[in-house]
Length: 599
Image (cartoon, rainbow, N blue to C red; front, side):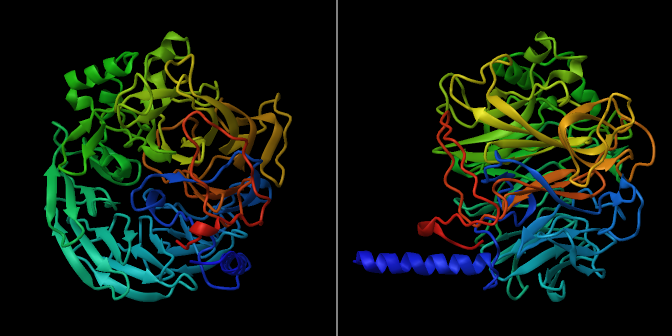
């Protein structure tokens, strides 16, 4: 049994190690928690544990606007100086070892320094269209290549440390769990690859084109992914055998029928541009099915209660877009009360993007998911211009015990009601959640709200939602062209205390950051409101900093009160209890000694 003196020495040693990490004295990932792979982790939860309630400030941009004139689109050919190329829509940054890593299609793979947004290195010899994965243990970055190879790169200089040859192009994001990397090929083969030797451990044949990356359940030691024939596959991590295989929808894929806005044609029903989301505590995997625009607009206004929405989906199973499947056997865990939605594509009839994916979060002993859903109460309150406007933000319960009166798949209303936030069924983008802050990557801006009251009495109706306070938006393209706008662009990219309008678009923003100013956000060269289809728009949160990726692949970094802290964030509070936030000063250390770890 250790003495008090020994315990004190251990704590001091751990503190010294942590200080070395902060000051760069040893090579380690800068944070114990990290956004290392697609949607943050191998479960694709889309959740980061940082408190973002403190003040926000502009840090830097990469592949963004130019300085002369400030906010312009000058296209210099160097992403440090301005927008130079579009990032593929399936590629998002991940973080580790002080850098963001971003595959840029035919333009190669980039590492961007988190400290200042400068390019750390560029490997021009690899074509990758999808998010990579950073491994803090081996300090390696894994990239899926269009040349059928999985690459292992040095995070220091981008040099190739090893490769693995697959049976077809790798156009889906790899994930890392323990000593293995998992990647799905275009032929639908799921590979388990040893991350040290880059040798195959096992392979599972999905027998249809792969449409999603794999997600991993640690408790059941299985992987889940989906294929073009609309089957969802669950595979044992032990040896690659099939645990179950199920097609959860009555729909058939159909022939390629719409332009996705990214140079490809897509089948009417598909899982593309999504990923399975694991709710580990409940043994559930969520998968989302693309719905064509005629399905999104099929109802004049969606029903007004969770039960009525569920009955509507049971009577019209072809409209179900979100599936909650049991990890044990693939059976239906429950029907989420979520209607279809997405973002318009150039061909409206069969078009629309996939729509948002759930973000899963543990709150104390509970596990919930955040999602945009549709509910007619919004229109009853007079907040709908037409039936498309019935979209609302929600918190989904995953069992019958989280809150009284709710059962699994029900959603509570969250206040996203500002007249400038435009939650519309055909303008639904990806979601990210950090702490109590929800971010929605719309095609015009990143909208953010901080939840302030999640108590059980809230959220039962549109007029009594979970309480929030609005955080600054990040507008893709601001404008001072209207005479009533008094703001002129400043180097902090922040219209503090005033209004701006979106460039060539009538929507207004107050206290907002902006990426471009008096210019359209590339790759657009003209037009106003657009149905642009699949783009990379997404936000990640690493080390307390928000990294927002715009439509065309600009990376815009916003610091928060938690930026630069090296700590294991404390467990989230219980539902309905919200202690006053305490944000560490930038660059200071928060240390939770009993659980200090890398990764």
